[in-house]
Amino acid sequence: MAVIKSTSYNIYIGHNSLKALNTFLKKNKYSKYFILCDEHTFQYCLPTLLFHSPLLHEAEIIELESGEDKKTLETCLQVWGALTDSGADKTSLLINLGGGVISDLGGFVASTYKRGIPCINIPTTLLSMVDASVGGKTGVDFEGIKNHIGTTAEPKGIFVNPEFLETLSERQLKNGYAEVIKIALIADAEFWKTLQKLKQKNEFFSDAIITKAIELKNSIVKKDLHEQNIRKSLNFGHTIGHALESAFLEQKKDIFHGEAIAVGMLIESELAMVLKRISAKDFRNISEYVSSVYKPITLTKKTKALLLNYMLHDKKNEGGDLCFALPNLVGHYELYRGMDMELVKRILEKY
Ligand SMILES: NC(=O)c1ccc[n+]([C@@H]2O[C@H](COP(=O)([O-])OP(=O)(O)OC[C@H]3O[C@@H](n4cnc5c(N)ncnc54)[C@H](O)[C@@H]3O)[C@@H](O)[C@H]2O)c1
Image: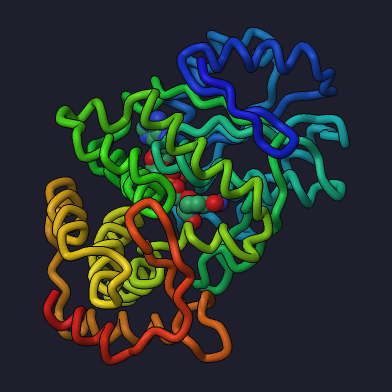
C-alpha cells in the first residue's frame, strides 16, 4: 500500500487501503457514520466496503440517484435533511463512496452542515481516484453552470482501492485516464515516457500509475490549494475541453469529460507547438498517443462555432484575455495569457 501525505491528511492507495480505513476509524472516535453513495456504488462498492470495515455496519446509508444532473442544491437539501433527521452532529463522519459527483457533492454538504463536519473520500472511478477526490474542491452545479456553488474543504483522509475499478466500463476508465495523461504532460516528462510504453489496457489503470498520478496532483495542490498559480496548470486541455463539453451539451450530444479533455489536449498541444513551447516531434508523439487511446470525435461547423463562443466566456480568462495552461517542454507548464483567437480558429478549422 502506498501512503501519500497531503496537507493535513493521508491518501492511502492499494488493496490494503480499506484496512487503513479501519485503523483510521478506530483512532478517530466519530459519534456516527454516514455513507453517501449512488445506486451503482451501493450495488458494486458498498458490499466490499462493509465486508472490510465491520465498524461501518452501523452506518446510515444515504443513497442518491447517479448522474451529473443530480449534482445540485436540491440533492444537497436531501442529504442535509437525512443528516438532520438522523441526528448527525459535529463529530459525525460523512463517507463519500463514489465517483466525482459523490465526492464533490458530499464534500460540499459536509463542509456546510453545522459549519463543517469531517468527511473522507473513497473514490470508485478512475477520474475520482486520480483527480476529483484529491485537492479539496467541492461543489454543485447551479443554473446550468458547472461547479458554480462550492467550497474548498479538504477531507480527513482518502482511501483508494483500485479494485473498485473492476466494475467500470472501458469508456469510464478512459474518461479518468485523460487526467493521467494531462498531469504527465505538464508535470513529469519521465511519467509521460512511462505512459507511452504501456501496452495492455489493464496497465493503464495499475496501482503504480494511479499512485503516480495522485502524487503529482497532490504535490501541486499542496503548493497552491486556492489555485493562485501552479494549480492552474491542471487546466491544460480544459480551456478547449470545457468549451467542447458545453457545446456538446447545448446540442444534446453525448461526450464524457475525459473525451473532451483528450480533444482539448490535442488542440492545445498544437497551440504549444506553433508557439514553439514544444517541438514538432513532441507534438506528434502526443497526437499519436492520445489518438491511439481515444476514438476520433467529429466536430461540426456548428460545434466549432459554439466552442469558440464558450471559450470566450471561460471563467479562466482574465481581463478579457484568453488564458491557457500549456506544456512548455513536455513535463513543464506555462500559464499563457492573451492567446490569439485567430490562431485557435485556424487550428480548430483543421481539426
Ligand atoms: N473536485 C475536483 O477537483 C474535480 C475534478 C475533476 C472532476 N470533478 C467532478 O467529478 C465529476 C465526474 O466524476 P466521475 O466521472 O467519477 O462521475 P460520476 O461520479 O458520475 O461516476 C460516473 C458513473 O460511474 C458510476 N460508478 C461509480 N463508481 C463505480 C464503480 N466502481 N463501478 C460501476 N459504476 C460506478 C456512477 O454511479 C456514475 O454512474 C464531475 O461532476 C466533475 O465536475 C471534480
